[in-house]
Length: 435
Ligand SMILES: NC(=O)C1=CN([C@@H]2O[C@H](COP(=O)(O)OP(=O)(O)OC[C@H]3O[C@@H](n4cnc5c(N)ncnc54)[C@H](OP(=O)(O)O)[C@@H]3O)[C@@H](O)[C@H]2O)C=CC1
Ligand SMILES: O=C([O-])CC(=O)C(=O)O
Image 1 (tube, rainbow, N blue to C red):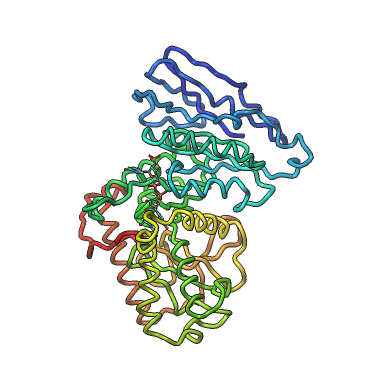
Image 2: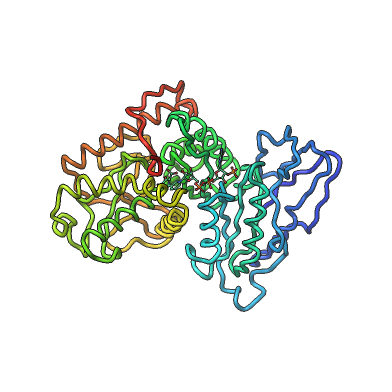
């Protein structure tokens, strides 16, 4: 049962729906209870016993609705067990998405709603986070979701307060972030976006499911994920991921092209390190048709130089051609990343994800978010892959991307609760999409 935080105006409280019913064994849900409109601009929130008040809640003054609201057709009350088709469905899961009015989300939300990640017996609720800047656009997104008539999409709500939108989230897909503009140093981007992810980490810590799985997409995603998890001490750090699956997919495609095979023949593809141009696509451990890549592609110079750089800079080349950054393929890779956590990894294979380093077997520095090879039993959790080779070439590359992440970490110490920031980035390295 989705809970709702009762947030009312000082002068008037208008509940447009019935209170939520808690029926043992029956999945009756009512989103309508979440619609509480206010007439005055000063808002006071009365917090239900199991809920936490947003720090900003008492002082918020704006015309934009702050309260997360169910949208249109998704405000109807329904009983998931009432009809034959839905009787066998699993209980609904809550997915919160930030940057929901952005380009990546515009692909991703429709994939989630279609059942691509969780299957055709898994109803979902989408809780969309926007901002005052994007709230109108977000309504447009919600209208398109309405018009798509997805059977599995049972609830959609929109809001601008992470403390509302992340309530009971079982998945949090953190996509919204300020893009790096002309002349902006990476350090500046780290600080601006880091503040967004510190705030969202606090909100997740306060109101999300204790077992929420968090995938950070907004760049610089590794360090944003580190900031987020440090601000969410009540959620296991292992639950946080930085998206490097797009890089993995890009690397598989390049190897397939070079080997003259279809990309489903490429396995064991690790992206190590940072989602930046220091990332390391690992051709030592990857396989083509079950054979080590180096046996199939004997051109070492191509592997060490051209392949590596192509993957590292793929995003930038795409922006040059397309005039905007990868949105569709990023959305696909988010679906891949989620599916990899909820379905068992095929025997002998693995997938890449930026995860918290805490006792890793590869000699990577601890206490950063570093992309590594992972395997899952399909229960949402993962373990690091064993049987991974590391030679001198790979070790040197790992050290470079590790140094970058350690420097990024020092740059955001003020946001992770580790003292004063000291920003000495080794060089102003780029995001994959930057020129
Ligand atoms: N890890 C990966 O593999 C990849 C990561 N990315 C990253 O994903 C993120 C989103 O990309 P995409 O959807 O294309 O981006 P969009 O430009 O479409 O923006 C997404 C959302 O970010 C928020 N945003 C935009 N501008 C600002 C701003 N000036 N300040 C604060 N927030 C802002 C907005 O949400 P709102 O106003 O609602 O807050 C916006 O809807 C970017 O950081 C991008 O670099 C992209 C591709 C791959
Ligand atoms: O730099 C960006 O915004 C895009 C990006 O991460 C990528 O294409 O990998």
